[in-house]
Length: 426
Image 1: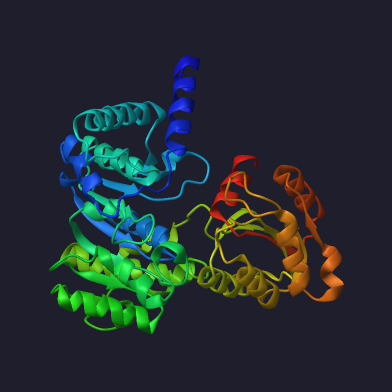
Image 2: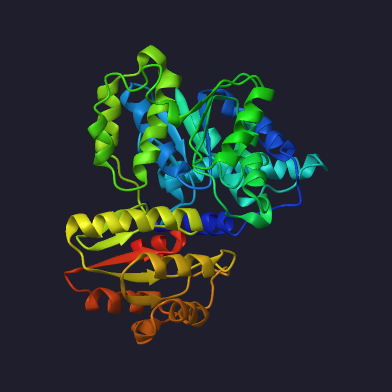
């Protein structure tokens, strides 16, 4: 790519990333208008829709892998991206190229500008809505057979909820984004269950009885058959599957693999191949989710209570298996998260050696000094001098890696955005 195109790409990515995350709209009419202007590309392939608080990205990627192994050209739309925006849109595991990105962006932008001129009801799409339109168009251009769409926030009002899926998947549900989705599990589950469509099968593995009840009630109302992962042992869903495959993935990914197995069975029916599924799971990795970048450096984007609880369990299992005596934390967090609870859980659940607190390169960052004081509050008094803070993440990272001992696991946690920043300068 020449220098002029590089500059153009940088300008367009900056433009897209600076589009507001939310608009005043409370309906999906805006998204439908944009897709209609683009020729309704989302109708050119079969869709899988995945929602949930935690695990939806992993399940989405697993499902895409299974479909690809089964011989289908498969698109994957996920969020957030860690380093490059291209990560959000891929086909058969290959991200959209920069040249393709610019071409698709140009066509979506032209459609937006035309609608803004001609339709007073249309508003400039929000960030996620815009990127979703790009993905929908790209997957059509690539002549995908299937596309897996991960929701961004919630489900009912998520831009992706304009698709007509072959199957709906709802993963773990917990308390996150309460300012948008509600203050109770039932309210949040109701928003996630908004992706359920009449007569379309539903796979769910929420980990919460109240959330299950909400999903079951919505499914019954819409005459949609629903399958809980708890029924895997029934109806032959495990037939032919070597159950040792679930040990090939770490910690909480085991439940995500079980969700993907059930969804693949229901979706593919007789076309499902247990050996292909096992191959996908054994080869599975997902950046920022229990990701090793060195032997004793682990990255994970857990940023809410349920995700952190699952991570603590996974990390303690890893420490026992690998012989690590201590855990050091590298931590930064968004100001809109319940970081007080997250920090308390980490302090109580892990044998922490050192804590390195930094700040995100974002307007949503939380002050490193404030976070440092919370760690000092929840850790034993003798550990208070082992908590350090710096706004210079790159410099602090070098310090953390330089001080790391061979018997200690360095865990990066608190934000997927921080994971992305660290990956950017590894």
